Each structure stands twice: as C-alpha cells, then as structure tokens.
Amino acid sequence: MELSVVVSTLNDREQLLSCLDALAARTPSSSEIIVVNGPSSDGTTGVVRDRDDVDVLVEISERNPNVSRNAGLEVASGDVVAFLDGEYTIGQGWYDAIERSLGEAGSVVTGPVTGDQLDCTDPQPPHTVAGRQVTHFAGTNVAFDRTVLEALDGFDEYLTVDGARDCAHRVAGLGFDVHWNEKMAARSEVGTDGGRPDPDWGEVYRSLSYRLAKNYGPRPTVIARTLGSAVRDGVVGIRGIFAGNATPTEWISDGLDVVSHAGGGFRDGIRARYVDRSARRNPHGVSVRHDRAVRMYDRR
Image: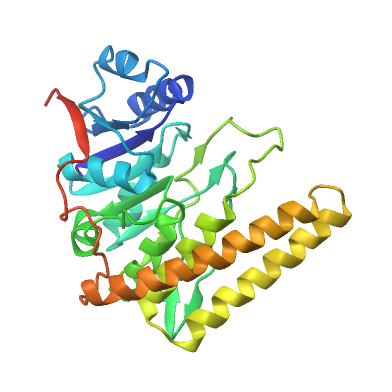
C-alpha cells in the first residue's frame, strides 16, 4: 500500500506538531505526508518547513475544509489517500487498520474520533434515504482507495460544513462501501473540557438541504427530512431557553437563519443536480479548478 496522508490545519500549530510526530512514528517512512495550511497566522508555515518528514506543504487562502482536502488530494500520489485534521493524533494501530480494511476489497475506511466537537466512538449505523443506504463517516479521520476519490472527484467545495456527509451520500450512490475499524483511532485533546462552540445553524441547514436536494432531487423525502430536523432542533432550542442556556431572541434569530439558508441550499442543490447529472453529483470537485494553492513547497 502506498499511502498519502492529507493533514489539514488552521491555526493549531501545537496540535499539528503532535499529529506529525505520531504520523512519523506510526506510519512507514515511505508514507507521503501532505500538510495543507491556511490561512493560518500562528507561524505554522515556518515550523512545518523546518521538518524533514513533511513531503509537501500547500498554502491556501480559503477557510473551507473541503477546499483544503481537495488541495491535498490534487498533489497526492498514493493509491490510498487518508484525510486527517491537524489537531488529531493517530493511535498505534491506525496504519495497519487502513491496510487491512482496504486490502480486503474495501473502498472507504474510518474509525473512532474522540475529543472533537462531535465524538464518534462507535460505528455509524447506515440509514436509508430515498432507497439508498448511507453510512456517514468523519471527514477528520477517513481513508479512501484512490479509485473511489477519482470517481467522486473529491469533496464538494460549495459546502463549508458537513462536507463528509455529502461525500457519504455520493459514496453510497456510486455503490462503494464504508468500513469501520476500531483500531483506526484518532484523538484530539482540544475541547475535552466539555465546552463546545455553538453551531452556525444557517450553514448547517444550508448544507443539509443542499446535499439532499443535489443527491435526491426535489422529492417529498428531501423536504420532510429538512423540516423534521428543523423541528427537532427547534424543540431542543426551546428546552435550552427554559434551562437558561439560551434566550428567546437567540432562538428566533437562529430560526430565521435556518429558514433562509435552508431555502438557499435547496435552490443551489437543485441547480447543482442539473449542472452535474453524472452519478458523482459534484459540480464543485477537485477537477473544476487548479488555483487552490497560493504557494507550495514540494520536497519529493
């Protein structure tokens, strides 16, 4: 297995160093390490360039994780490409888990992710959307056979959040399988004190309505799932008001953001569906543009 690891980082220099140390210690020296940085302002560029275990450093100007992943994919040469966020440290069995899972005719493999905003420590059960069985995975710790990424044309850069969820729908639509291996573990020490930032509900619902409309079209299932999710989150918000964790003004503001962004996402998703009518459903993929990198340092 020829492995390329794309590490995305944004202003998390100290955690990135731990991430790179673990990759150096727990993957073969032949593994290709690609760091996609940006736009960081904490001196990340300097510390990465001082290391001799990073093969490629790509500097980008957009704060979009899907742009970062595609920028790394564009220069990766391995037949297996893994994506990891810079604040995560891989476990001892991470490399072997990828090799074993993808070596058994697998397509995509993921594993436990702990310490982030949404811990994912157990396999995600597949759920059915319009007759399609979809298994979600964390974009912060996942590996693909290269043929899968080529079929997908990478990640959809329209999305600023939940890009991996959109990718999971497209993986299922193309007939590829997602495997779970508990030894493919990645851990972050950031945010483990219980504090979590409030989500940008507007962007969350733009992503939800966009990916459903793009992948399944303007069918009742799409509208019902979006409305059902909004109602559930609205009820949780009301409970937060009574618990003193939020105010009615914040709840109303979030609700207005949800309505406007969900409508915009639905419109853009329908447009995207007809722009790219192929099975990959990705009009904003890696092949569409080649100007992501503002600077590149390639040691290969």
